[in-house]
Image: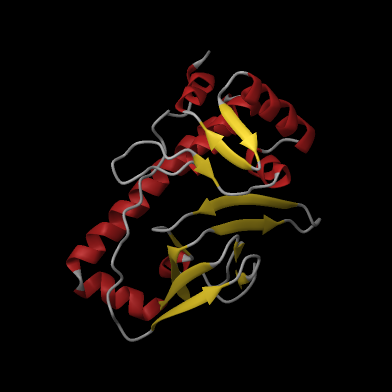
Length: 216
């Protein structure tokens, strides 16, 4: 079973001022890069939200990541990735810092504090990815949905759960969980009746939703 505490807390990291760094504003729904584009930079979510999707040769689309402020993406270029294996787009108005690959390498080499924070972030995310794989293999779609909702609910600076989640469609949740929209609708109604969530225009998640993950 995936850990109840698998959610990563993302402190705002100060990106070093280096040549090759730029900040770009994106509107909701605007693509940042597309699957197959040249991978030549690392991106950092300064504010807003970013969705990572992948599309198969048969045209099937899946959501594989939903990022908040304080998260990096596109770092595969640092390991020799030449093309993006997924697409990234803003799901709300967002400010994205773009750091060219060579500039990022210089920053990691010359800025020890930044390097330590970036390394800690990557390690933390790998732990989360491992937990998600275990989740997909061993847990029911109901538990996977509960875990996704808890991951989407931000943690405030004091570490407490900030339960308000901006608008997210059931289609996106279905793609994230790996099930059908009808199953998502069924479980969302179930969670609401049990008092685990409130879903009236704004989605609010209560910490009692952890009971779904912890229940065997």
